[in-house]
View 1 (cartoon, rainbow, N blue to C red):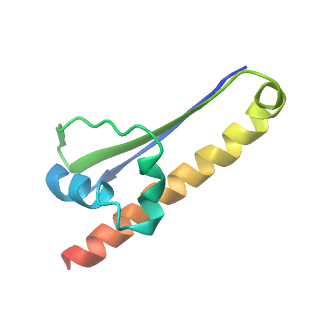
View 2 (cartoon, helix red, strand yellow; view 1 turned 90 degrees about the vertical axis):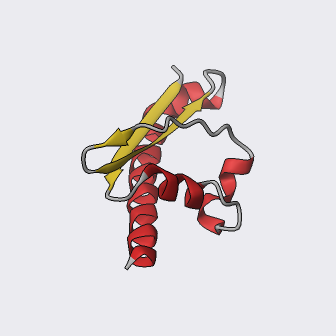
Length: 94
């Protein structure tokens, strides 16, 4: 079983501002993006920007056994990451 987990959150700011912060590697919380692949669509949302994070894992060995438990924890962590991103951005905007 492979792991494929995503989380999304609407951030009440324009896409350019959200992407500018998330893609700036100086922000430690988002440094892991350097090792991964970052894709984005510059589509607006009526209430701001729809931010989405997706994590996929392999299907061999350890992952096959741990995927159900790991997926739950990863989903929780992604939700927290998006919440923290929104907090940082909205604090800066004030």
